[in-house]
Length: 167
Image (tube, rainbow, N blue to C red; front, side, top):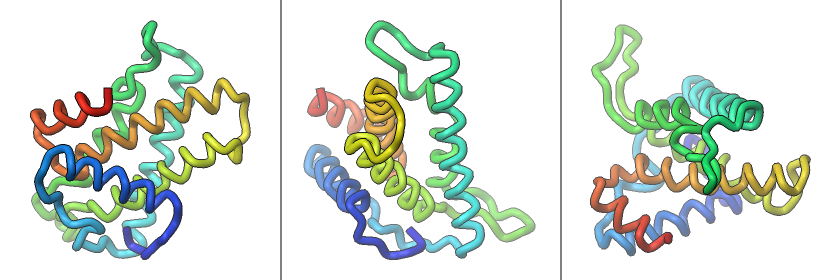
C-alpha cells in the first residue's frame, strides 16, 4: 500500500478480507503486503490501474456491449484491469531495469481506491444520475471481489465457496 492509511475504504477492504479468510478457513497472504514498490513506480502503476478502470467503465457506458438481462458481466467489462491485477500479483523474471517482483502493495492501494470510490458512489459524493451511480456501484462492488480473489491467490474451489456464500 505504499502509505499507511486508516480510511473507510481501507476498513472496507479489511472487512472483506476477514470474510474471505473465514469462508475459506485458511490464513491469507500477508496484508498489507510485505513488499514495497518504490514510490514513483507505485504511483505510476496505481494511476495506470485507475485509468484503466475508468476507460473500461466509460467504454461499457458508451456501448453497453457487455450487458446481459442480468446486468453487465464484470470480467468482460474490466478485462484489462483484471489482467493488470494478475500481472501485479505474480512474480516475473526481473527485467534489465530490475523490475520483476510482485506488486501486491499496488493492488492493495488500488483496492482501497476502488472501495473509496464505491463509498462515494453510494453516498452521492460522486456526481451523476442515481441510475448511473447505482450501475457503477454494482460493477465496482463486484470488481473489488474479483480483484480480492486475485490478490489473495484463491483457488477455483475457494472462489466457488465464496461465491456460494455471496449468493
